[in-house]
Length: 390
Image 1 (cartoon, helix red, strand yellow):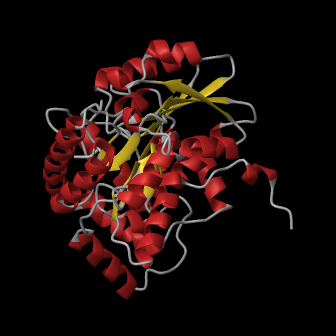
Image 2: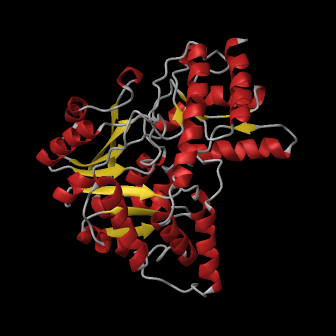
C-alpha cells in the first residue's frame, strides 16, 4: 500500500499529540495535569442539551441540507446583526463540523496550486497544513512579544508578492490570546482590498474578550465588501461545545455555494441533533459566556503573575484562554528547544503543555488556563520548580 505524497508532508496536530502522550502517562499511573488542550472546563448549558434531547425525541435524525437547516443559518446571520450590527441573510451562512472544517472548506474553495497565503506568526497549528492540502504556499509574517504578537500593515506589505491571494487573521489569537482593535482590523482590511487579497477572519473566540478590551470583528466590513472577506465562528468555545462539532462561516453567497459543494462531497451536513443544539445556543441565553469570562479573567491574572514572576516575557492577553510566554532562557542542553522542554516538563513536573514550535515560534510554550483555579495553581507551581528550581 502506498500513501499519497501529500500526507507525507503533513504533520499530526501537536496539541492532540501532547494530549495523547499525557493520557498514556495517566494510564501508566502517573498524575498528569494538562494545560495543553484548548477546551473550557465548563459544561454545555442545560438549554442547549435540552434542545438536543428534544430533537432526538422528535425524530430529528435525518439528513439535512448540506449547508445547514435554514433556521440555524438565519440564526448565524442574526448573531452578526445582534453583536456587530452587520446585516446578512441565511444564504450568507454555512454550518460545518467545527471551525476547523469551515477553514478547510474556505481554503479549498479559494486557493489554487501555488497561491500564497499570508499567515501571521505565531499561528494556530492547523493553518499551514490546511494551506498545504489546498496546494497553496504558506508565507509566515513574523511578530514579536513586544508587538503583542500583532501583525502590522508594514509587515504584511513586506511579505506580499504578486502570488499573494489570501490572508488569515485570528483574533482573539490562539496561541497568544492577543486581540486586534477594530481600527487595526479595518486598517488591515483596507490594505488587503487595495491589493486584491482575500481575508479569512478567524473569530472563533470573539465572545471571550475581557474588559476593558471590547470585541472586534470584520463583520461590518464584510457587509460593505462581501466578496473580500469570510468570517469564521464556532460555538465550541463560547458555549463549551467542543465535542458537538459545530462551526460556521459568514461569507458571500457564491462562496457559501462553493463551500457547500466541497462539504457535500466530504461530510455532507453536520449532525442533525447538533444543529438543533446550536440553534438553541445562538437564540437563547448567553449567561454561560459571562460566567466563563469572570473565571477566565481571574485565572489569566493568576497565571500571568506567576509566569512573569519567573522572569519570562509574556504579553497580557485580552481574550481566549492562553498565555504564550517566551521561555527560551530556561532551555538547557537536555532540553534545547520548546518540544524538548515540553517533554521535560511532562516527565518531571507532570504537566502537559504545547511547544511553541507547533505555532511557529520555538522560543515560546503555550499555557491554557481553561482549568479550575486550584489545578492551575498546582500546575504552575510544578512547572516553576522545574524551570527555576524554586
